[in-house]
Image 1 (cartoon, rainbow, N blue to C red):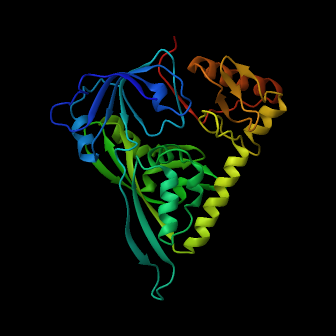
Image 2 (cartoon, rainbow, N blue to C red):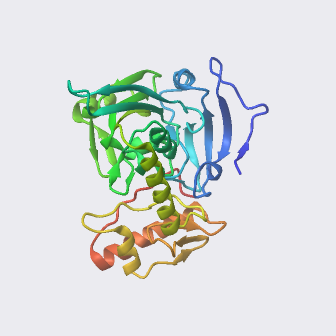
Image 3 (cartoon, one colour):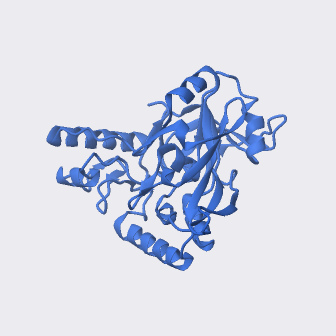
Length: 326
């Protein structure tokens, strides 16, 4: 249930078409179903409206972009500034073109454009329905395109940026740009502008991903749909999807798995308040009911300390933590 202290009716910022809420309980916008309140939350009508809204913000206003909140914890003390909620807002997905490489007419590719608010599994199913393959793994990522781009989300041997041909960004000045993957440094669960772009943004305006073009090879759509079905069955069998969670909490360290290390420390099933290290998958923390963001963060820190003490490895978080502690 989404809880907010609504302005009655929800406020319309002059010159915009989206919906502005104040004092919004972020537990309703995050998959952990825990956390404090955000000062303001804006859901744009579309990309043009998002640009118009960003132009209204003071340059000092903190801005946070979220999609499904499936990789996010907002601390109990709340989140200052404005949250931009993209899921259900930037939802366009299109097959833009097909093209061949080479004079023989072979190697046919399709290019799919998806806005940042589109759920990643929808891209997988959309590609398969158009006989394009390679995006099946996106069915296993419980977030949006925007989040997948920001962290190079991946699973089952593939990562988002393997298939990105261009990205669309918006900066806080409300300007939209197309950018090449060459303008970014992309690694395991990490994406950042290269040095040239980074310097340019530091001198002008920060920016966020609002869409991407995915180049995918033509293949057997029926097999892709079967692969998606099997991938989802595997996910259901191995992950605690019946309880609120935020997916994998930690990145896998080089040559090992975070879940193996956590389990080897005897932490499966360990609890902090209403939060628990999943008994089904040790790299998941679940909300058993009534968990606070503090419960979850405390458990995260305890896992890191225990693994580092036993193995000398400092696990790096995959989830984002924002806001202020109580």
